[in-house]
Length: 306
Image (cartoon, rainbow, N blue to C red; front, top):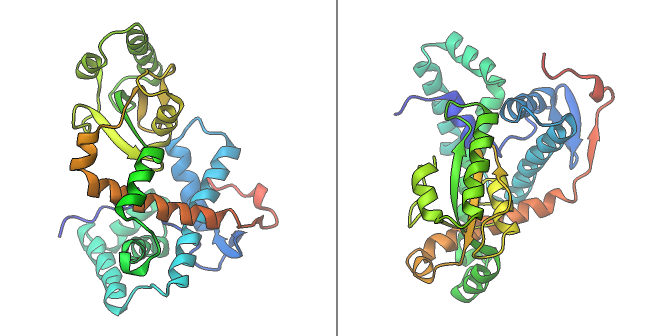
């Protein structure tokens, strides 16, 4: 088994954490208690990842993430989907492996603390990863008729809800300051808006190592980082986005391009999977809109940096 990495697990599970335990409740969301440890975990990790975010926006982001997981649990309960005995035992095994790989209980606890985690939250994160995977599989099965994804439905949805774009990505983790990267991105955008060949700009400047198929991404809503996705949606087909988009990854200079029929034909099943994933996420988001958020008394005086 590969070395169990606490931080790697957290990156995979950023949308999966919910209330874990009834002690020290700081708020309720949709009638579910949210513990101090749960809220603090998201608060501090988002604060680290988005240093310029306002306190209000930070709070909204934490609530949104926890709400999505509460919705996940509600969907699982509605469909009577849960972890079986073997899957629950795999959580125990995963934790034991983590302790072993970190060299013992003390080092394991230290790694958790550095990630703003408790042992209980770490266990919960992994169990939720298993639950979400199992629930998605259940929803995606045609025989359950929970997400209609026949060819006619998919063809219509691709035309309406899928986009294609190329980008020059200037990463935040490239060793330069944010200000320097922004100035660099602005110069590249100026070149693009002045008509320089966009593919040539991508080849010369982009720090994106994942783009394939002629540097073009085909995607639907919720599949890409928010800043990139919103900028593509703002841009007419065939044009360069008039501004440099920003995401947690870096700065994006974007050109929206037409959907490519050949790409669609050769990646049709991948697009179907993306459609199913979006529909599942939309179901979760729909549930969250009905949730009432109530802060516990004294919430605004709590220092989650402690």
